[in-house]
Length: 154
Figure 1 (tube, one colour):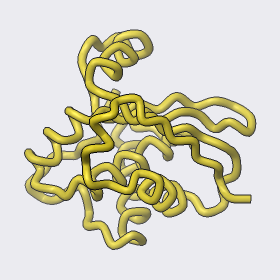
Figure 2 (tube, helix red, strand yellow):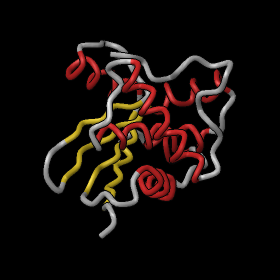
Figure 3 (cartoon, one colour):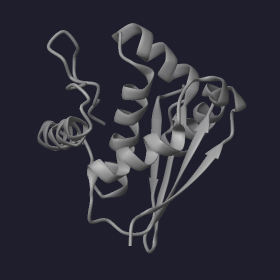
């Protein structure tokens, strides 16, 4: 049985972007792990909402692009994406919005599967999995030569 994805658009400004969020979510999750089963939710929020979550759960009072909240059982967890931060990164990195959102969903989903980037070895493994998943979708390596690794070690 495929993964069930519940999508919550909590910041209605996401609807103004020319993205098929359901399609992006399904493709990203499928590319990251074709054997996983369960349910997950993906919330599309603004910077203010993700900043509150980042402060509450990570002790960092600033917005970030994506957060993941793994759970045990059939509910795999939640992924939260922040519109303003993602739009700014897309412009800075000269990437398509759809490709960047897809990358961040893959990244968040890998966290739900238990992958992390606490150290260089974990970060390298996670980056490799992300690149492989994105290549299946025809999306270029998000970690280009001129760009430092987006995965920050914790």
